[in-house]
Image (cartoon, rainbow, N blue to C red):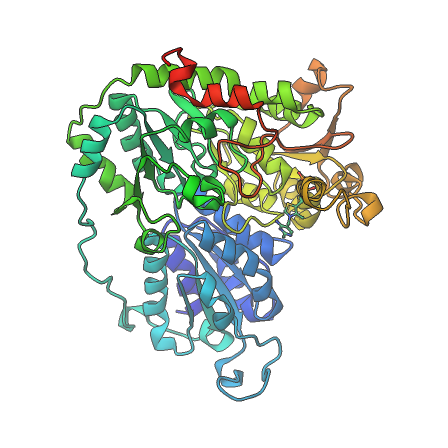
Length: 584
Ligand SMILES: Cc1ncc(C[n+]2csc(CCOP(=O)(O)OP(=O)(O)O)c2C)c(N)n1
């Protein structure tokens, strides 16, 4: 059997139905094998970065492994941003890079390059992968493939890179006789103790769950649901935790963090016990003033990655090294008896009524168009639909305002946050599950950066509504420049050298059905119905004037005090549960 045929079959056997990639000399054997195999589809993307990120979207939506491949040298380096993204956000993807024949490879010679397009991709990606290996002996092929897949999927998931010289791809092999990898035996159930959690939650008067990306798995979500239904405990999520619970849950307060909902950030600052599940509690959630982050509360931090716990900036939390699923299972079995937190829930209701996102927009946002556009999308979305967002103001408008219905997935890049993520990740989702509609939300800058993804949407008629929020600026940075650079807008607006592309013309050039939503027609019902019934389309949502994200946390401010600041009296009153209820 030809080894490239074996490799493709290997992934098919693991449930992979679509492989994304970009052809080139050094990967042609594998692309040819994928093309010949009736059980897998090879999607030729128009840039390796699109392939790398589409594989992430595919992995998240399918729950299986994502696979992307590229040629050596420039193909491999073009995948790096996607690889880094998968690493920081823990997405299991196998990236295969072609390499020059092993007999042409320079190895340790003190020269820059020996073969054409030779690049030491393994060394480059080592810090952004769980495992990266050059397979230059055919006898190792089966072992390394099995090992790589095991590593990608075990513990805290993440990407692996397999670098395959051409001569390895084209050899004849008998896989049965090749050495295989045996997963190391270790007891996968972590040793952890839930007694302190139990006790703390039972005694708590103002408890809260903070849910992060580590809860994004159906079996974890089912255990979570059980726990929440039994305890009726209030919940906030991080950006990466959006979608892990049905957000119509009455005690869901919102998203916390630098751009979190004001009510959620005020609520979390008032807890006495915070149970953090599957979230790194990074600076975006705690703010930069670590000492002012819940100084008097008990924080119980559950994470699958012990390094995250051990190296954490806040060192006063109770650290529990466990898989969230195992932890919740044990907690659910313990039949925990919590209080009913009546006054706490009343207080949270008060915060939710007075400081929800709609109130925020009404009170503080001058240019409301971006938020109207989010509500346009909210109205259209149905249970089970998928949302992918880009990076920038568009990402935060969505995070603050998109209302997730049952079974909706929400994909956003939390760690690396590269512009150009929303479109390829949507493509990966659409291939993984053609029956779902994907709302891909991006800005004009991110759209331009990922323009190579656009033809794939129309070429395959993917079930994607691409919403380009065009504010004619790199809005997120403009807002930053207004705050910290005296309104000097270098590189972010036309006067500073940034030009948004003509989105309509680009849509037409790539064969996409185009719609324009602006302030004049946003209430036009006929247009709304046309958009709703068009499967593959680009919707340019046009904003005029300056756009802002609100609320937003400034550096060195506690998370309960995002800008615009509330009037001091109002803030004091709202932050004090006793004053709020006239108890002191
Ligand atoms: C690849 C990459 N380059 C630069 C940045 C820095 N950056 C973050 S947001 C942003 C502006 C995004 O502008 P746009 O896509 O138009 O979205 P908006 O903020 O206007 O919604 C920039 C330049 C980044 N995150 N990723």
